[in-house]
Length: 185
Image 1 (cartoon, rainbow, N blue to C red):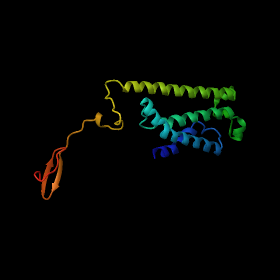
Image 2: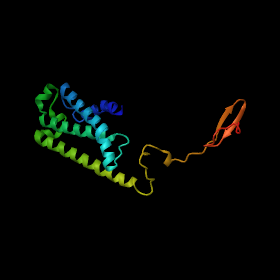
Image 3: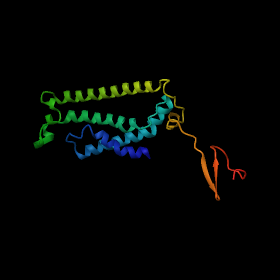
Image 4: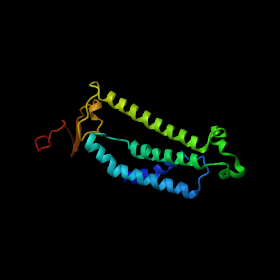
């Protein structure tokens, strides 16, 4: 179910790069549908594959909701920068309102800059994510056992609490793990 819920958000993530451009409704729908499909495939196929093959656990689904749809959004931004010109904006303004450097850059040059920004973003995200992963694997941090990736108990001290069971009019205190028998009552 989480894949379907996040698919609705993935469209907004992907269209964010081109949202200030004059894109037609069909363009927004196309980007949104593609992003939702990418997100669902990420949750159902790519994440389990990465967990099995390299032990990469994306506990919050960042890769599937923000990573892959964000790259799609970057690609759509590159395409928009390439095809946007003053005729698209009509009387509203000029393409230089969105891309100020377009006063002296060609559409191809602007698309190249958009591409370089996308490559830089993916590189910084990959390197910083890898470094954080190395940091979290230091011996200072407790290693997470396979199958217990989503449990918080290893990181918290939990007090043993005696359970109180009311039986008839008497209170009977049982220690953790002790079974209730007739002799305890």
